[in-house]
Image 1: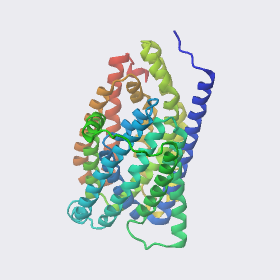
Image 2: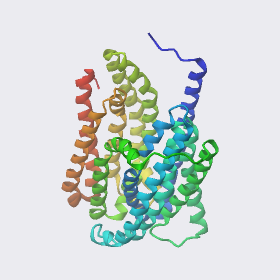
Image 3: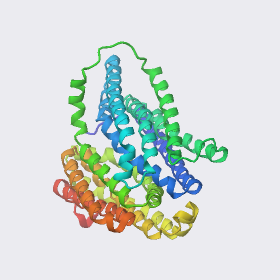
Image 4: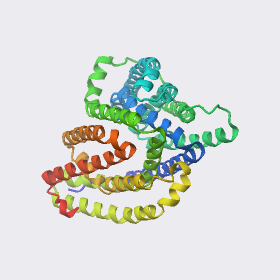
Length: 429
């Protein structure tokens, strides 16, 4: 029997979905403008320092969150028990901030020797120290977003997590460039991004407290809390290790400028990701419904049609970007003008990744998380081994090729599992 939803609920779902997509599309567009601006105004060298440190911060952030953000999101979605939700939020924030402070203290002591002896470049040291401090407002913002999403305030969550930081960063970039209020430190871009995150986290926590005022309540013991969140975190640990090692290899064997070039080109390629994510979000409820009804034939058709539709939509855009490569690189500045081949590899990687993005979401909707964990483990091990083999010889080109091969391996494994569980033939895709 087909489930019927009230008309008001359907309208609200459609309204919220389009609102979120609009906000995130605008935020990504501003993010793209920001990357072009910092590439032109500050050059590939400072962008490279900013990008490598940001990559480290993302791995550390994943560790210190320890799955708490998703745990909060799940519990805030449960009706009633407001005091229990607040106690969870406070406990999670205390544990994560405690871990962060420990990492900041250790990081400040080892940043300089790590930069000199491991990354072979002392210029990273100051940026790493500044970057570690940024983790504090970043964690607060992440947890606030998770609580708001769980409480069905998804539009507000998108505003404070996606749009506001990008908009503030854009303003700070322009003000700083024309006013020159700060010396031209290696960490100047991190200072600007950290300022944007700090203001966004303050706005977010104020809006959160208006809805959920903090009162005295019995907090769950850290032991019980860690026990539950550790199950969620179990899917992240290998990605953290692999991501950190690969970032370190890039920092050691690639020049700072080339790291900035690759990061900027990948950001431009994310334009395709905005389109593919919108389509995935539209398709995913239907994929889950067909799986739970046991209608594998229709599920196969939907995956095939979705992949064909994605290809038909993204292929012309990719070809237009490909034809305009010369002008795009000139727009970014003189540091980027000779990286045509690198851009082609990044563009091809992104195209394959985005047109096959329904593969992964199908396994998620079918609750095949164990299979996704296996695929993630194989992919991360492959990426690490390939990085060791390619980066010392081919440098940044080796990093781009590694990511391309990683996407191919992941998609092959996803196709095998789709065939196994849903009888989806690779030839149809």
